[in-house]
Length: 438
Image (cartoon, rainbow, N blue to C red; front, side, top):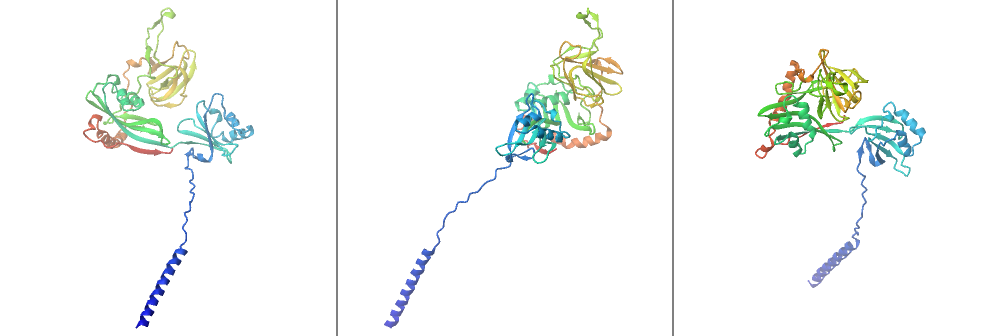
């Protein structure tokens, strides 16, 4: 028994020693864990403009200065004249390099090295368009447009003094006032005689270039004006897609404008009216008929066609200076005298409100103005004494299309609450986004 007990004790002691040995071995053979730092190199985020990743170039921006030319700009940036001539020849079918205008921006994309040689010339004639002349590998030129975003918005207001003041308080561009007063309601509401408490609702579209550059109000989709407790609806609708003619109609499809604008220019005053018995002191008070209406305005003020029509004359004479004449139909013609510069060309179809020239002092004139002349059945008459026709009514075919078109817009307009009422009824946001890459 004693021998067996001793053997058991010995076995337990051996097992104990083996256990200690394994524990010691495990602690000695445990591998050492070392922390390793891994460097993560982040690629710079692409900066895309004009269809190029600007990170790949040294970008030089400037504007066309007086005396600048395409050749001089490239020569200043280390491009020799033989290469300049070759670039200009290749690009001329796409863009005439002589058309660079003072003050317009341009961009040079240059190589990312010590030479910084230009690889591409980009010219922007306006905010939307740009011309690319690329001569990196091969020479090629093309025109393109920046992406445009349209945001539909709504605004309401109650008149306390004037509509311009009401909109200005909300940070809305004064252009909207001009559109409402001059384009939409010119013949139905006198905005100089608005009453306190008159109110309005407008659905309009703002325009943005490259998502961030505000480019102004694009158009007014619809409006509602409550003047002297009488409602005036207005809906924008295209009546001729080929000629791009757009008019505003009320909710019964009646055209809101007349065939002629009241004046061809935003004027400061009328210096001389139509008067067949006019006498002038410098001519010895002899009768010298004045068959036009003189609207005084600053030099450079745009002159607009007062109605749709075709340009029959765009010329210069000693008395008239630069002038344009338009035939509107078999009955009416108009003429615009003393322009600084003419824009309209013979044979061109112009729409009411299109700019046909700019106010000047050419011809027989004592100050900057536009002399507006008006013919009816071939005889010059006073436009202010004529019962001018309404604009061409909408056709029966288009009328049904128009009424279907405005139904959801009128519903949207009717469910926009006036600003003082918003505290009582929460108004859902009326904003939609339209994208355009054209």
